[in-house]
Every structure is written in structure tokens, then in C-alpha cells.
Image (cartoon, rainbow, N blue to C red):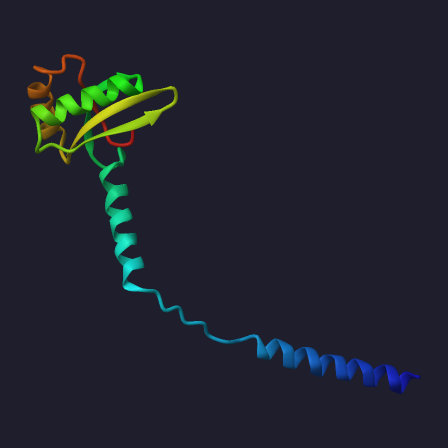
Length: 126
């Protein structure tokens, strides 16, 4: 009886050892170039709409239809400045520009305030 038990334990150990060793294999993933291209586009889109890394100017805060009107008006007046709408519960913000320095942002804020009086400067991370 003891011999049979030891024999079964030995067989079990050898079998599990073989199974454990058999599980170590390498997996290679071949992804199409279109996937890499889409990931790069998403990455660029995400960096263009973040508020955390650059100064932005908020030109509007309110309802969706009014925010879209403000965005269209801004794009008509300043076609070369980046502008986007961001939803913050329960309202929408229209944020414009990507300014690295506060000085650059303040210069543009003064120019934008001539057309959008309620504009304000947002610091990175706010």
C-alpha cells in the first residue's frame, strides 16, 4: 500500500513537472500597419485635447448648442488656432490654443478677449 502511494505520488510529480515545463513558450504578435497608423492617430488626437500639459484659453462655458455656435464663431475669426469642445458635467467648455508658456497664452488672451469678453486663461492641470 505504501509502495503504491509513493508510486502514484512519483507519477503525479513527473506528470505535473512535464505540464509545467510545456507551458513556457513564446508568443509573437503580427499586427498590420493599419493598426499602428490608427494608434498613432489616436495618440495625436488625445494629446491635442488634453488640458494637463499646456495653457489653454476658455472662451465659453454653457449649453451644447451655444458652445457649438461659439466654436464656429471662433474658428471663423481665428482659423489658425486649435479649438475644441470638452464636456464637463453638466455643461460644455470651448477651449482654444495650446500654449507652452504663460506669457504666450496671456498675449493671445488679450487679443481673444476683444471678441470673447468672458475668456479666461486655464493653467495646465486644471
